[in-house]
Image: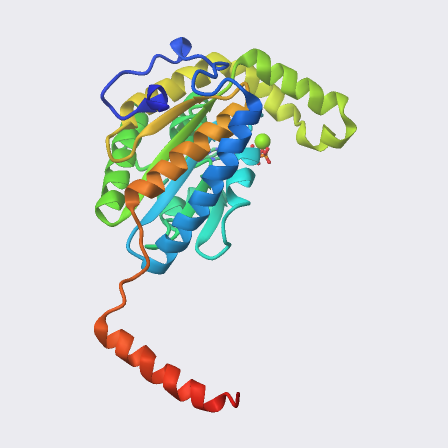
Length: 288
Ligand code: ATP
Ligand code: MG
């Protein structure tokens, strides 16, 4: 199931060969919505166990071009989860404080604890996406010994090392690229202009970025190929049909949590005896 979308280093991604509009695993919207509702229940159940057990954390990371539906997908998934131990971190244009540090500094601060789920809305990958496309590092302060030609390649390496480090310290990273076509983006921007209640979502900046579409696609392809590993895989998901994209995301989250196999902490015989003692004491206080 959905393995076609998995990139874990065992095959090369050629983005232009990946469909943005397929729905090969579920053809019908109603079916997908029903299956997704079921998945969300299972996800909720597993999250409660994960939180109780506190042995492993997980990051679900989302990257996409504008209007691919990142926010809606994140909302749909979060809506089923208890707020305890689940949070979203959005990575925006770095502040001056963030820029004064290494690029992973602000990301490390948002790594979940064992038992927690972190949803990353954008991430460390921005530094090899917009950072690469716009060559932002040229305008940033760097020591004389830093070779600008090597910055992006070094970041790919650092991201892989960082994700391996987290993996070995009980935190998984699962990465989603929501793959939208340029035409579908134009269509969604148009409805942001035509429908008054969506006007707030349209920004001239987003429109300007369309000029760099090809450069962004190349940057995504390179970033995914350089950082896809068994432990921290990428999923490239067709995003032109939102219902399909959300359903596939829910499948992957469900399967990831299932693979983590969380369970409520075991009750030891000592603990059982202790609970029995408290039960007896409490019962004395209840008159009837
Ligand atoms: P929405 O528009 O749906 O509210 P968004 O994630 O697009 O959500 P914006 O504030 O519009 O939020 O955009 C965030 C911007 O910050 C994006 O253009 C992104 O490329 C940029 N950004 C994020 N991280 C970095 C970074 N490390 N360096 C430079 N730009 C970054
Ligand atoms: Mg935006």
